[in-house]
Length: 190
Image 1 (cartoon, rainbow, N blue to C red):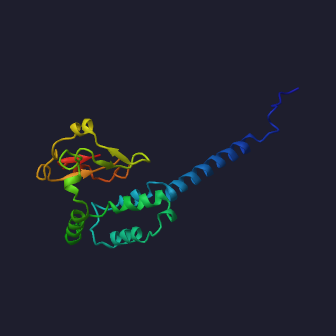
Image 2 (image 1 turned 90 degrees about the vertical axis):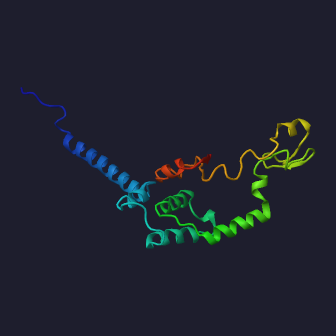
């Protein structure tokens, strides 16, 4: 009487082959999804060029137009909009001096921003009802105790800082290559 293998009636190679095919198919589908819908697909697209794109290049004009065409923010996925803004960071920036000067003059006429940037004893007298948007009441009465805590005048003078940078923690600056420019600022607002 000879020895017989109890598993000889099963096709182990077939089961292993099916398992291997399943794993490979899963890997291919996952890879395709990452390529097509992954957060880094725009980054991969722009890695082929040397340096930033020119402001008036066809690609930059298209990217700006894509953002301008968004009329209702709720109709665009937030991640898609951030990807558009992030891709626009690859374009060199040029300041429109005419628009910048118009904005500055409009802002100074309506708000007097330099004078009211900080709450001081000079611009907020004792007894003032200060409006703010932290709580639903939105009004804070300035009494003697609070008034004493305010600086007498603006802590920063106009000529103290020539260049500033405003950064947040939303992640839009990640891989934007703006680090050197931010580091060159005299003052960084976070």
